[in-house]
Image: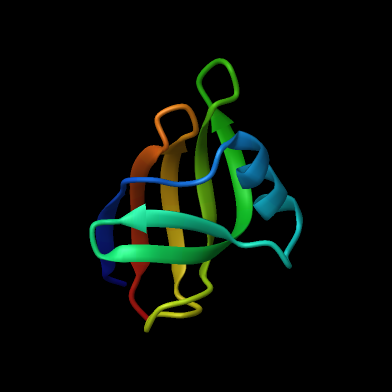
Length: 88
């Protein structure tokens, strides 16, 4: 299955990201060079020390690819990362 890779240029702070991962009614919004993406975060895994960087999994909640699965990495202090969106 092909994936579209894109950088994350902005996003939520740690409390908002954790809230989005724990409540299916709450979405996280990430900025990318192609615009804003609203996502439903299904799972997070902390990486490194300090609990501020995560591997994340979920689905797009908005855009033409709504429902497409994604995997990404994200740094809360830097508010940057990368995302791979699986083609539907």
